[in-house]
Length: 212
Ligand code: AMP
View 1 (cartoon, rainbow, N blue to C red):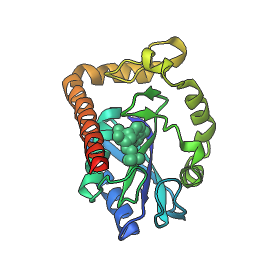
View 2: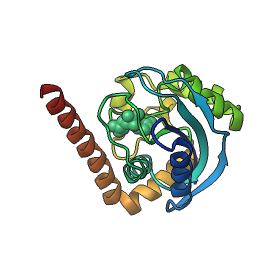
View 3: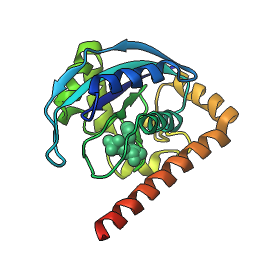
């Protein structure tokens, strides 16, 4: 099991209802357990078009899902809860982001872990500090390690395990990953391809919308 932190936010419709529904769906996620949930806070929107205030929270989970599998599940929950991507950083019924995944560093367009903007977002920092103050220093170090581009070259795309010595997660975690990957390589590859295809489709939709 790997400990992860998930950020959740909503600023459309029944915001609290959407956050609670997302938490409920996370409870039923396979190979995953919720360990802690922060208080839900109200925050001002940051970036994007003018829009209403958000409700935000952070959730600590333990999961056996691999990073891309987890991302795929979060995107599935977003879709189930009516998330429609129209404008970048626009209003949304629900937003679920992976903040951290153990000590793993991934730097790909479709998945960046730790989330690179944690320290720019008070709406993430405040609930994260509440449930995991010990994580902040660790995340800061991981983000420093995850230098753009360079890490991309040193990261195994199928696992997110960095190859370079100083980029490696713990030996225990690596062994765990290897076992999962051996067992579930094809599922994992499918999850990566599905997320990448969805991202490509979304980009195409944005382009078409911009044109008309
Ligand atoms: P958002 O609009 O904030 O939901 O962004 C979702 C997009 O960011 C998707 O295309 C994801 O593939 C990508 N992404 C990159 N890193 C992450 C992450 N750590 N958690 C969630 N989505 C991510």
